[in-house]
Length: 249
Ligand code: ACO
Ligand code: ZN
Image (cartoon, rainbow, N blue to C red; front, side, top):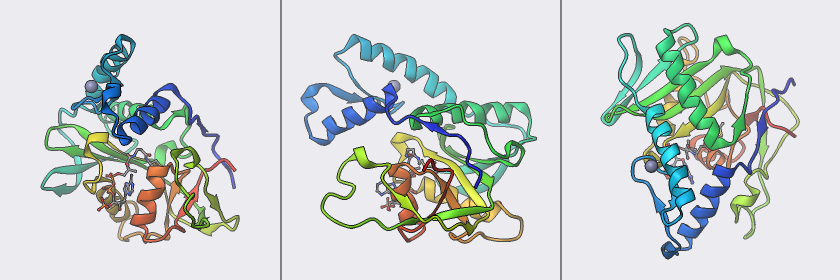
């Protein structure tokens, strides 16, 4: 198996910040001053000037990044009451490619990815979920793959997955299985989560990735999933033993 060298740092400043503040909010201790911006979704301490500055910087860059003006030629592959899914292919006009790059940068930033070289840059398919407010609120980047590995069930117990700390603690089989489509990234805007946007992106991917066939969940794999990714994939594939690829062992 050829592995792409993905450098995922789980301790980037932003990620830490989100996680730390999330824990404060989860504990219900709102008097600590953690605030969530209702437009960009960033959690920060309003009473800290340093935090406020960081928020302002993130706020503008983020909202600019997810703004979707609408394109003359857009490939709408699914429509819903609350938005639509647009497919972007490698040879699309530069305005479309640029938007995908901008969104990917925001996503990678949030995921703590640094500089990932796509394996099949000219075979990548990107699905953008565009909300009725003309914002890119979901993104799925897919690539062809040949094989993947099954996540092994973890021992169940009160401690399992009790903390975000162990969110990389999953193991997978070393027996490769044939697969067709890799989900390199899946991301939904923080304020739009749990509205089945990710689910609809993957449904659409399965429908559009290969002409004339609907991919089964045994033909798609998730690249080195985060905790959110794992929870989603387990639910979506209806098994904790879904397929993964591109992990650092
Ligand atoms: N916790 C528990 N269950 C979850 C979660 C979660 N955080 N997210 C999804 N699920 C399950 C639920 O059962 C959900 O159905 P329900 O809401 O009816 O209970 C089901 O999956 C479908 O969820 P969606 O609403 O379709 O998922 P959503 O649109 O919220 O997006 C995603 C999920 C993409 C993982 C989002 O949480 C996200 O962007 N997280 C941050 C980025 C990230 O970690 N992405 C995955 C990286 S791994 C990779 O890219 C291959
Ligand atoms: Zn904001």
